[in-house]
Length: 261
Ligand code: HXC
Image (cartoon, rainbow, N blue to C red; front, side):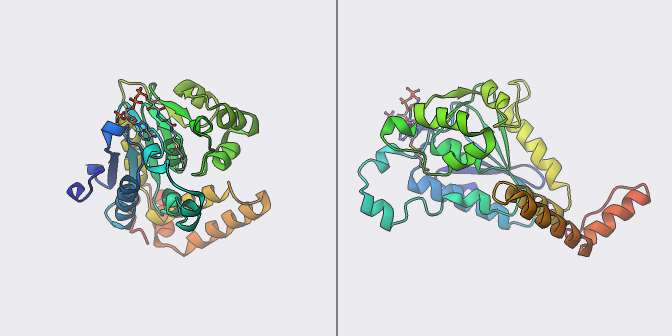
């Protein structure tokens, strides 16, 4: 499977889990067009694969990704960026049906952090360094950083990151509520992410997809709209076999057997 991609490795560390590893180490996983195409294709392929229940996205120990490829971007004109709709396919992870867990070690900067922010669950190792340094390049974040960070960590902290370019540590990111947790080195961030993905892959897929969709909607909708959407999706799950099985199994004191339907 992974042989088909030049810039990412794909493996199956556990049944139901696809592990996608960014692999352009010489450039600290800077995201050029070819690299990004591979990431998007590998994620889409795992999303479409019925044997996969959840994905883990990771990089190397030194860098999750040090941003969009500056050398590739530097000579672009406004007209080129605008008319080619540069970054049009960027929102790839947020469009996937299945959950993605990002496991971040080392640098997650600029587009690298924005890629991680699109994941559904974000875990970091103690070595993680997160930031939006675009201001040092004469630009601003363009992959969702300003909007997602403002919703996740509030205005003041987002302004500080975006306007000063300061890099924050794993502990600070945890304190700010930007990540689920810092995973100690002896456990390993990828290992922890794979365990979470395996746990999710063991659940009924219909309910998992509904849970992902409605939590993500919380970042976009008003509270009233979001609550209505949640209630309707909740109601709709009573049309699934997995709901009947899950609740019957509870009543019969046995483990449910999901049919994912
Ligand atoms: C292209 C990059 C790169 C990047 C690192 N490299 N980041 N190439 N684009 N974003 C390359 C370096 O040029 C170098 O290649 C090699 O990776 C190793 O990097 P060094 O700088 O030598 O390593 P180090 O001294 O350890 O410094 C690490 C670093 C630094 C602090 C992460 O590389 C850095 O500041 N990188 C840029 C971070 C950044 O500004 N990111 C935001 C990009 S803008 P050579 O060939 O010299 O060995 C962006 C916009 C997003 O992301 C838009 C939406 C998607």
